[in-house]
Amino acid sequence: MTRETYVNAFTLALFVAIPLWAVVADEPFTITLMTRAAIFAIAAVGLNIALGLGGLVSLGHAVFFGLGGYSMGILAYHAQTYMSLAEWPLLIEGTKSMPVIWLTAIVVSSLAALVIGILSLRTAGVYFIMITLAFGQMFFFFAISWSEYGGEDGLSIYVRNGFPGLNTLDPIQFYGLCLGLLCLVLAFAWRLANSPFGLALNAARQAPLRVETVGLDPARLRLVAFVLSGAIAGLAGALFADLNRFVSPVMFSWQTSGEIMIFVILGGVGRLFGPVVGALVFVALEHWLGGLSEFWHIYLGLLLLLIVLFARGGLIGLVAGREAVHD
Amino acid sequence: MTEQPVSATSVPQMPVLETRGICKSFGALRASQNISLDLRPGEIHAIIGPNGAGKSTLIGQICGTLKPDTGSVHLLGKDVTHDATRLRARAGLGRTFQISSLAMEDTVLQNAVLGALGASGKPWRFWKDALHDRSLTQTAEEALLRVGLEDLARHRTAELSHGQRRQLEVAVALTLRPKALVMDEPMAGMGPEGSRLLTGFLDRLRHEAPILLVEHDMDAVFSLADRISVLVYGEVIATGSVEEIRANAAVREAYLGDEA
Image (cartoon, rainbow over all chains, first blue to last red; front, side):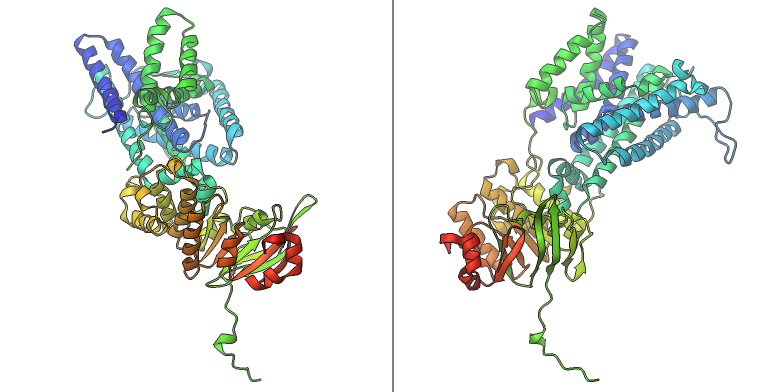
């Protein structure tokens, strides 16, 4: 076992221990914070597939996070107002069922990632960053002007959506659901990194011409990575909306894209648990420093600066050292 | 009408790789001027020429990273002028780079497995561990064994010496089971011992896949090449056997100088 494996196990242990303590100590707010961290971690694990494995610096992942959120918002809104979404050619009704909402969020954000990916992956570097950012802003302003679903004010959902066999209104049960999904997503990201696809994508980041020379298409590898990455961010968005029982255009804002990227950079780009550590540390800082000062982002910025300058592998790199050679 | 029977030996062997009159200009610079050359089964065809003669441009057009303005490129008798690099690779064109182009953070084995994965044509597998897939690792390990890198399989590519990276370049190309190889200065930066070993290796390799060899090391070229083409200012000024090229006055003047 490498040192990084211990760090990963410790992180996962925190995600189990802290909420359990919170149940015993009757601190429901801590559970909410941990749920927030777990959901952010899912979104960041998604981004890490594009960013860490594929080398795609996307500043537009808020699009997928937001689409996930609005998938939940719109379906639940129609369910709570008993108005169907569409009557022709098919009758589509709203739903309060989480699995259906998650699936919708994943499908919608994958399709968006496919279209955005096809258009933006023709560029690279700074242009790619700007195009993904521009798509994010497009969705942001569209959501603001979409008055049917709350426009700028957003959309409130009065009762949290349901999952068969669970009482999702109980904070710890909803947390368990989010943690379970985080574990699934992590397992997928881990397998993906070591899979033939992951190997090729990893090489396409480092030496694209080499990948072409062995007969593979780097552009297609990147597109698939971008879609998988967007799908996971979309799932996180649906959960985030359910946590807050509220969706608003803020989910589409470039600050959201930036925050998801901060989770990844803070924890360690390309490290399996980097996004998880990053999300946890971010939520902790947001809570503690945010309690001290309104301007807590200054300290976050300082920390980020130090990490980028002195710990290239993020917090995980700082603690666990260089990545072990996989075998 | 009666057809003349043709004896098998008199039929020239079909070239594996061929360029027909390719021209390429960058602005006013004519980097390739009507270049026609071919690579026949079992041979090493060396391309020599001074710096700036257009060797890299020629290789780019053969491998698909550059498109000729006019003329065509043929691989195994098929016109591949408009095919992308990866399609030419799939059709059997192996390539090694002048400046090593490898995934430096990955292990030596991972780089070789990438080649095997490309050859398998099945990268869309998202769950199974690539390094536990025997169909991939077997091809990769065989190739590493052939170039003598088997002991370094688990090392990071960044840890390899310059010469070892060249060996790995060759190994990756071998995993494709190429029908033709294009090698861009495989000896560059190698010590005399490495150079000697690689020369011996290429000597045997030509029977498996003919090699179009761009090389500055004249000892290697003269000991290996069946034919040599001399490129000067984007033009092939001579093609012939080692003796013919050594004896060619124009070549001596343009390039070889005292070395020949």
